[in-house]
Length: 459
Image 1 (tube, rainbow, N blue to C red):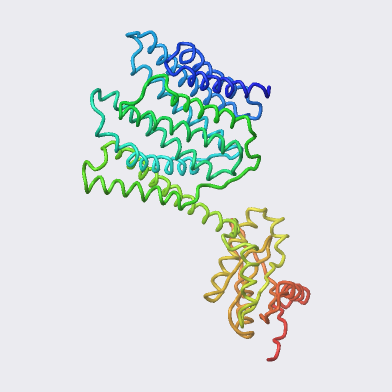
Image 2 (image 1 turned 30 degrees about the vertical axis):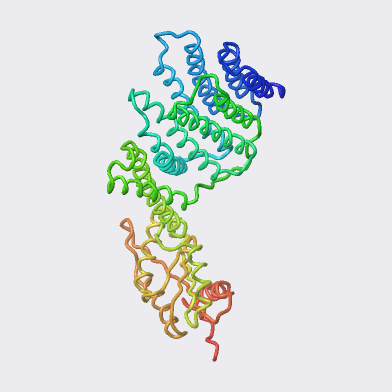
């Protein structure tokens, strides 16, 4: 199996040697051997044992097969001109290479990384934005020199543009994922393939390209590097990293700059530059909308994580966090409240009545607390309150909380009475306030006095 990966590079080496020895186009070299290398590359990728993403493998193989069909038709037409095989048909097969390559290379570079909608948008913004920039500065200089068939000019320009988008997409994915030998080889292969298209464009513009030249082997070299890359294991690390926001901001800023230049100086860049630049800005707008929605969802999740579902009060987690802040303050008190005889009420009338009772109790407690206080449900029929003020004022709040339950609750046509035992502990900067308040609350329950307070410490 390992020897399979050596077949394509060996055939390419033989082809390059034959090209050097026989500079003129040869049927065996340029029609048979050249396309045999491409078929072998596709076969090598299909047989790669460490490339276990079947969809990526299929997409890359199809991209190379489509490219090779275009190469075979082009080679055949050079030696045996056929009216039915024209440049439009050949270029169409070359063009189909890119959609499959986008899918296959994207999946192969991400390894075990799962791309979500946000990551896909980020990669598209970076890829299309940088592609538009490269098109403006690397492709547009060639445009004034094109003449003749507009469709042929369109194809000649479209391939480098697609290459730039592909290269930018690969770069963005390499940035996201851990660096591996597979990613480096695939990236190098894409870069060589794209450089070959630019070389072809330059030679065509200057009327120096000739079929069967050594430059044609650069395409095969890029594909060989990609096939070699898929034989290496990708990263086994599961990561959730995304593209750094600075790259997204840079891509959007450059696209906006291109759009501004095109508006201020019409004709400075070709009109088709507007398509990727506007697409980049629209995708950035969609990305911003998703980001705002995510931030709102995260905020809601954080609130829910610190909120009691039954009463809507802060829960124990939020209460403990606030208690840590209380010990840093110069005054204040911790009140721990436990309802009296709640379990018999719950057993007699049912959990639905018990839940409604807890909701109404929390409302009464909230009304009795001074502004700036915090009331939380700690679990079951236990509540906690953090109150600002000195020992006397906070003790009065504890008495007021007990008094709120002095008259019954009307729930589901039942008059329900419930009491509360309150443990009161003044803040002295110690970290054991909760334990001391718990002791005070059970003391109040045992003594039946309603509120039990630790004596205030003298200054």
